[in-house]
Length: 358
Image 1: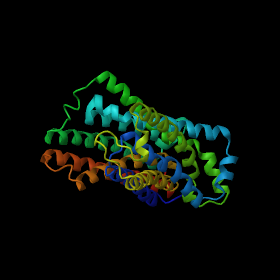
Image 2: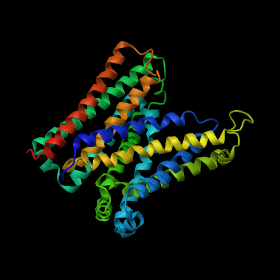
Image 3: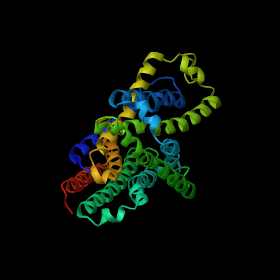
Image 4: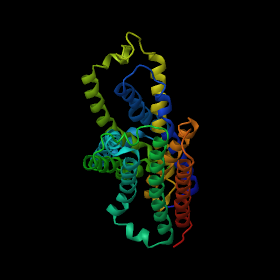
């Protein structure tokens, strides 16, 4: 159950940076509807990159997956498909609850479900809570949740300061509908962690085949992400049919700019870059998780904290916070400090456990 939790935290930060960065290339795609660029990038995220990197980094990939119990493959795929529903409904959460409440509920639930679900399901939460190292790790999870709420509040404040649509974003405010969608999105998004947890037999098989322990989770990603691909492919196909946007894959106008044709080569290259960056979040996640020892469940919290942390820093780099009030800037810096502190606390808890502390 050993590992190097400090190295694990670094891998999780790399994954968080990749996740926070993937939309930057997407923003440069021109004259493609959302469903077209999302599916084009998703083919790299959920299909090409997982199989390419798993093939390069693991031993006998096809043999390992063919030897895995069918029930394991099914559950990994199922949880991946459920996670896909979470991502697709996240935007609706913001629509009906606004940025502050929506992010706090959805991301908070995602963190709790993805982190605490597996140890509760396996009946190990009591043992974890009885150890000093476990208590420290759980404290870090609580600090993360507080940090998420603070950053969400800061985002709400920024939109108000800049005269955006924070209060108006709530022009369609509907507490009952918004909370139902937020709970659904949060729970479904946390299912990705359940999919990775269900893939333990695949990890055991790939280790037995001689794969480096750092890469043991990559074959699991191939299966879990196939579930996410299924959900997103169906949804994008429905939108493409409704919006009649299939021709955009081959250069047809999206109707927003007359007869102007999309720059296909540039768009596909940007979609490939963004999609691969998206995949790298879980490429590094599995490496980080392999180093967290007995408290690998805390990897999901580290993942969420690092995504929010680096997304916020990207916002500063892209000058999205320019014009925000001093109070709002103080609030977001406090949230960043809490998230950084949470990763330190969780890492310390894991290091105590790795060192044999009670």
